[in-house]
Amino acid sequence: MLHAGRIDGNRRWVQAAPVHGRTHTMRKLAGGLAAAVMSFGLALVPTTPAQAWGDEGHEVIGFVAEAFLTPAVRQKVQAMLAADTDSLTPHNIAAAATWADKYRDSNSNGARQATRQWHFVDIELSAPDLDSACFGHPVLPPGTLASNGPAQDCVVDKINEFAAELANPAIDPEERVMALKFVLHLVGDLHQPLHASDDHDQGGNKKRASAPGFKSGTLHHYWDTEFVEMLGPDPKQDAAALIARISPRDAHAWSQGDPSAWALDSFRIAKDDAYGQLPPPNARGSFPLPDAYVAMARRDVAMQLSKAGVRLAAVLNKALGGQQHP
Ligand SMILES: [Zn+2]
Image (tube, rainbow, N blue to C red; front, side, top):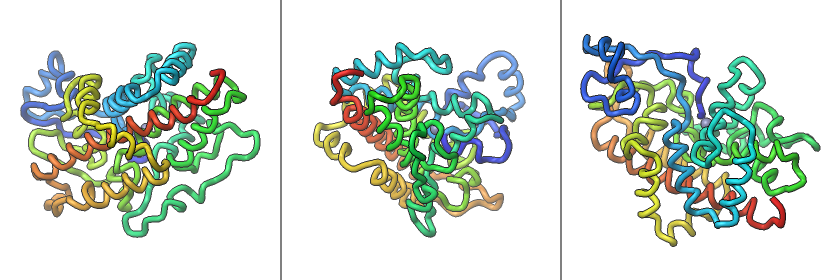
């Protein structure tokens, strides 16, 4: 996501972990030039901007959701994706859940950048107000497709708009498949606590953090990616482990409410944990995360990915479950 592109410039430099890289990024760097560079013990690695939940988080959510779709809706979703001619992502649910980030970034100076703010809702810690964080909930002019809506809109509104298009068979098929892919992604983003909160720091993008065994990065990046990668290397297996712990009672309870309520749920986790449990910054202004913080974040991330998957399935089951024709 999310706050992607809100950080200064399109490129930032981070110091690679000096030992035992824990992340996929580090594993991918093994070998070749990267290994040579790392042999100096200090590698500067260019990274792309923060993406609210990295691809792995969205893929996990996609796999969890798939398990909670009704068979009929799963079939409809798969058929819609299979017929899609877009080449930004493969045409399965987990991969398509990463599509909206690729779409936003696929013409960085063009119209698709106007979708940037649709990936988050900056509810301020100091004065929480969902309505102002959603720019007053702009109403789409009659006849305007959600994908052509105003740039200043929040993830809550966009989920509702795209879900309504998905539920309406009269909408142009090309728009409906786009609506499906936005829903697959944005319900996930809504559950990244730092996509639903702000401390006048661009959702944690302006705070630096570090933890033993991790490469240093922004606080936002830690929640997007580093804590997710602690679940394991394979999104499908990660999802299976999460699904095994979701009881029918959980699934029922989490499916209640709407994107506004889910945003406030994410905000609460940001307020209590992501921001609330931060240690004091060090002399350089960076936050050295203790083991207890990392363990808490890992639990929170597992919970949020689980809730996101169940709620994504609920949105899709509702939007696509009652129709005679796809
Ligand atoms: Zn996103």
